[in-house]
Length: 125
Ligand SMILES: [Zn+2]
Image (cartoon, rainbow, N blue to C red; front, side, top):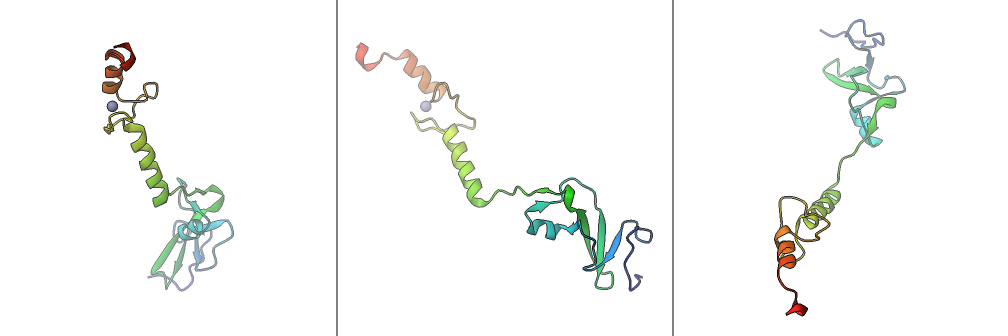
């Protein structure tokens, strides 16, 4: 069903520019090749394809100049973020954790803030 040669840079035969394995022109890279450089295709369309193993394997090619830096958070980064979120939503006074960030101007939850505002302070008794 496929011919032995897959070179079709103009995309006449396959619809998209098609190259033999390891014959992709400079500037085009597979998703894996981009990932090795810390890049991801982003939202660009497929720029071409590589066929090998007699056309049984295909890898899509993307333009490297349109690729964007990969921003995959590592486990450590995620853990740090979760910790930061937890700190922002935990009241330092009562230790309760809320499903939202506590207002910074209070520095504690509304309950504690209200209690502190209405209750007489130690010295005023
Ligand atoms: Zn509190």
